[in-house]
Length: 193
Image (cartoon, rainbow, N blue to C red; front, side, top):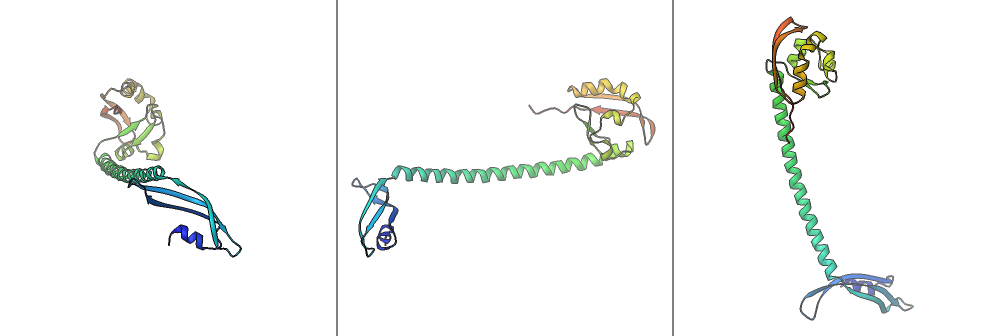
């Protein structure tokens, strides 16, 4: 039984709204949207209809294309999400590997922002300068190093912050060891572009 026939045979239905396909005289299939009012007698029997039939073939074709594009887009989003997840996991693994290396190599590592504020220090830095991450991160370099030690390093720090790799050797006041000869390399952070 078609949707139209069901609507006609239900005495409580006063409207119909159906879509279907029919074969056109040229042999092609046409999508039709039929809707209207069902006229009924006192007993509820259908006596006629007032309505319209509209060729919605183009609309149906566009809907199918839209569904197809949405399906394709959803597939691309899934693929891209998987790629990004894989990249994020790879970066996380590399970050963990680098952290293990930086924390266990017998050298002092520190990272200063352009405004000369500590953003990172490793375990050896903490031990050598008798400080914790909480004491240093977010603090300016002047909060850790004395003015006597900073003045001679000012040009080295400035050049490094301006993009130049700098090396120096000199004696510094080290809280754990007292005055000590230090060999250091300052490497600037360079953008990828």
